[in-house]
Structures are given as structure tokens and as C-alpha cells.
Length: 185
Image (cartoon, rainbow, N blue to C red; front, side, top):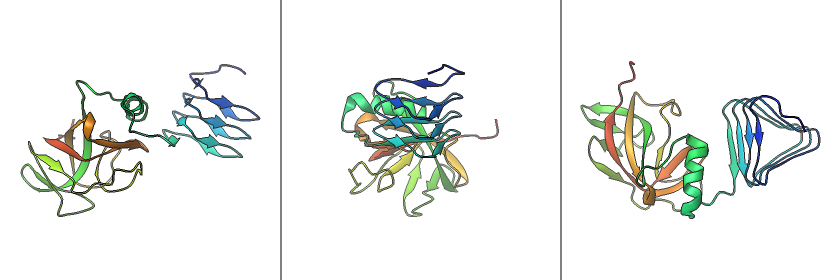
């Protein structure tokens, strides 16, 4: 095995066969990369996932499977590895794109009846508490994750309100709306 560039393979991860990991990519956890698979760019492959055959994972892709967020120990690791942010005093600031209704008031892109207001806590009624990535709950991420909506808002999330962290986003039960982010900088 050669060390070239800034690529890393660590933890219990395995890379074998003709597989390659290069660029700034990282493979860790119990991930397995084999066959003629390639992981490159700034891609992350972690958790209990397999990349094999002639598959390619590249760019800023995040691949994980089997992550259980019930463990408080793992929730911090997942948040840091997928979004590059950490809880500070059990809270984190994340972002969401929404549609502006009026000053300090916004509607969800997916449910126009779900309203966000500056300074208020929004709560999902009957959120899905499973580990599914796309399900009921408030979806938040980094400011660059979103591509819908006309306004970017910042929200504060308590660690206890996080349901799951997958595919580069957090799904939570509730959050406090901080307000609109000026994107003209």
C-alpha cells in the first residue's frame, strides 16, 4: 500500500483487491472498499458500508450505512464527520433553505403549512423516530447543502432533539429559528 496525497484509511476499514483511495478521500469505521472500486476527491466512506465492483465514490460524497444515532457517543462523531461541525454545550447551529412569506416568517419548501419564525421554536408533530434519512422531521445541514427555497435561515438544535444524521444532513424533532442569513457576502 502506498501513501499518496492526503487520502486516509483508518479504524477497522479495509481496502483490498484493485481498489483505490486517493485525493483527499477518507475511508474509516468498518467500511470495506474492494474489487476495482475507487474513492477519491473529498469523499467520505464510513460506517458499515461496502463499495465494490467498479463503483466510484467521488467529489464531496458521503456514504454510510447502518449508523444508529441512539448512541450519544456516535452522534458527535457523525455530526463532525458528515457536516464538519460539532455540538457546543449540546447545541449546534445548522441551516435550511425556505420560502420567505414576510419579514421574519418562512414556509417549508416541502410543506407550505409548516412555518418557521425568527426566535421561535418549531416542533414536528409525530416525527418518525427511526433511523431513516428521509422521513418526517426537520431537515437541517450546512449552508451549502440546500438548493431549493429563496431564503437561507439558521437554526439552533439541541443534541437531544436529533433523530438521525445521514447523507450529510440532520433530521430532528424541533429547533429554534435564529433568523435569515444574508447571502450577499
